[in-house]
Amino acid sequence: MTSSERESGAIIEESGAEESQEKRKLALDLQIQKPSACQRHVTVSISREDVDRYLSEAYDELTPEAQVPGFRPGKAPRQLVEKRFKQTVQQQVKASLLMDALTQINEGDDFSAISEPDFDFDAVEVPDEGPLTFEFDVEVRPEFDMPEWKGLELEKPVRDFTEEDVNRQLHRILARSAQLVPVEEAAQADDYLVCDITFLQDGKVVGKESEQTLRVRPTLTFHDGRVENFDQMMVGAKAGDTREAKSTVTQDSPREELRGQEVTCQFNILEVKRLELPALDEDMLSKLGGFSTEKDLREAIQGDLERQLTYHQERQIRRQITNLLTETATWDLPQDLLRRQARRELERAVMELQAAGFGEEEIRAYENELRQNSMASTARALKEHFILERIAEDEKIEATPEDYDNEIRLIAAQQGDSPRRVRARFEKRGLMDSLHNQIIERKAIELIRSNAKIKESPYQPDEQKVFAADVAIGGRTDEDAAIPEAKYSDAPEEERKTGAERS
Figure 1 (tube, rainbow, N blue to C red):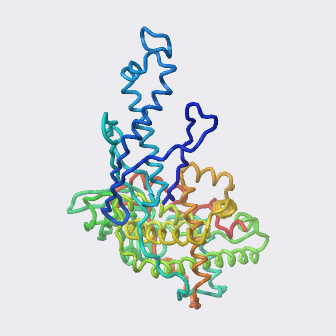
Figure 2 (figure 1 turned 135 degrees about the vertical axis):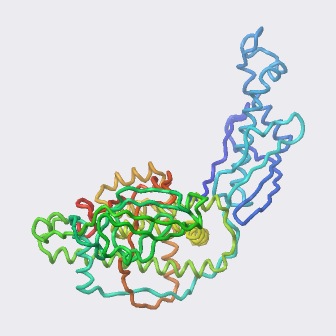
């Protein structure tokens, strides 16, 4: 979500004056209706005096250069100039009046806009008599009583990572450079299946995906649905077999007619594959980041685990803070606003996970989780944002150039790219606003945490029980293709590197 931007007041040069001065404010009459906490319907009346003043100034500027048949340039009578150029001048004056009125309203204290005003420019007319009136709808930051944020009681997960934890993570890293080898045997847990998937509702095909590589794990997730006990269904399956499962399409699916509907997922198994891990020899150590010894690699993995624990600590503390701060935030949010912000929330989540050093499969699983509950999670995130934004404003928290540099440097390190290219991509894709919000919110969270009472609790890393397929039951949308930062493959990659692989 972008923060509202304030436009600077225009400066005009008055005829005969030797120096410029601030343009005189418009005499505005505002009638503001509140359809919901985040919506305003505004009716604006600009006084006749201001309308005549703008018209007079426009004709004063035009008359000395006006070209009228039968007269030399600038010599036509004022009355004739006004008659000949009335329509053109009124359009220019209308644009100036609307722009100045909207700027003045935005700089006022009536509300804090979070989107551009929605109104029909062509429907507005400059009247020959009386005030100029127009109306618009705008989304605003809701008005609410600030919850008490000092002295919250929070829990912080902690863990001393063991050799077993490092072994498990090393296995995951080697798996990214492993080969998927076809086998004739029946599928086992954690094997991979190459499948054609057909989605049916009441026997009618509503979607198809070809040659998708799926891992045999307890849960299989799509963008807009999930299959539980997927491993139980697939263990023992061979090429040529067909398996079927039920899945309920989420309420956030882009296919409205499928929302909440149960569909049959038909898996036609083409091939069974199994991971063949590479040997951890000198060549592999070098490939994983130029390590000299296995000990060096293990130390780097330990650092990755610590960084990921930091992410989980921040996430859990943030979740607790969000729950406590938003429990009284019962105001509704416009559905259009939620739909627009859902993609930004997904982009931000991907950036945070990348900076924390998580692998692609883990990021994709979290993406699918967010997609399946996008409206609810976005509503929660927006309410949290509004509250944290208020805290940041009250406490004078700002995002500095150094903050942007640090965030981009972290993401670039995780992607094995240069900060310059990462920044260029963010700017091109309009992600700098998301990065700004991420910085401001993190600083506000840090302030809340510094004023909280924290006790420690044991942290148990999540077991990898979910495989996230890059598939939508209802079909892909343009927005699916617009999440650019997480790059996936259906099989382990040889070139993608984690923080441990580059350290």
